[in-house]
Length: 472
Length: 67
Image (cartoon, rainbow over all chains, first blue to last red):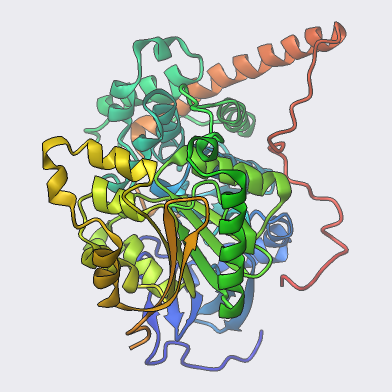
């Protein structure tokens, strides 16, 4: 056993807001570093997981976040996991991302079973995306397998993964937003009721969802825990895992709207397109950015122009198809510095769970992430004209977390803007304020104008702003 | 002893016996179908998703950096 520097819980340390459900241990902030404390109750599991090489194999295969053992004593073990710059939550994933997260969970459970362990929980929050891939982040989620015991996290897997994915197949990706209301997964009964009747004929969906919903309501009044639980052989449990894996890996959205033609629909030609790319590269280069977020960044086309300059890039879009298109490029090209996620700027993910802080709001996470550059290309007209958000308000939003802001302003003559304005019909005069003068006025309250350039061949102007109050 | 810190749902524990039977039948029939198909050369390899199995090769001899 290593000698430990006593008092890991210093004055600067603070328990992580999401880390309280599992008594095995918890995560805390030691200054800027995130550490995990393991309680004595979990020592036997931890030691076995470590000594048998279980952790090592998972970490080596990039399935589990790596960690270092920081200190060991009789009453606590402290481990320090690898730093993850930004945590995305399940309701911010595209369909493919969600699918990969589900498959990862099953893969880990199958491996755990083969080594005499189980995943004691199957929460979707145990997975996040890091270096272009889904990764399991809860190192203490493992327990010993008990001969003949069914999988205790089975229902959680259904409410967190299988249910939302199947619902998304029939109702679209927006279903994932339901997880903002149900932090422990969508109730089985609700999943069952929302599925079309024909799913009752499915040999996977009938037992895993409809029958489960029935059994759950039948046994919901067993207050004394008296009903005997049937044994389940290891082989049987493996069959469940494998059949779920096969089913989910073939699952797709029912209405796949093909992505990729957005840029051909816009009204700029190839020259203008490339001018914009060059300009972004030229503006971002001297900023020496370590972190960049492209809000409304589509499939990441423009973010990729600076991919070699910026170590960590995030690309968000309201369209989950764009996010999926981005994610498939990342998988295909094995890109490790782009993190795509779904975000509606007009309604960013709220803080949810106990105390409203268990899963932090998007704005909170962005404020902590502190991007050096925020890009908002071809977005302001949507915020202003579709969302009716005044310039000053959107400026205040960007100013909350941005150091430098590259923002594209499409003028009234731009075909997108014209179309948005025409749709206001008799209220079109209410939006006379949509012009460069008002825009600059609103943004100058929070930002200093650094650069401004018209995009040749378009009706659009690019701006580079610097936050006046950044860091203060 | 297993340490239970959340309610796994009694119905969910019981239903697994039935789910497993259904899964067993399904996997078995898929297997048979696969064998028949491959006999006639109809199998297309789909490698867009990883296999469920974790690669354990050369984990023994290599890196200590994760420890």
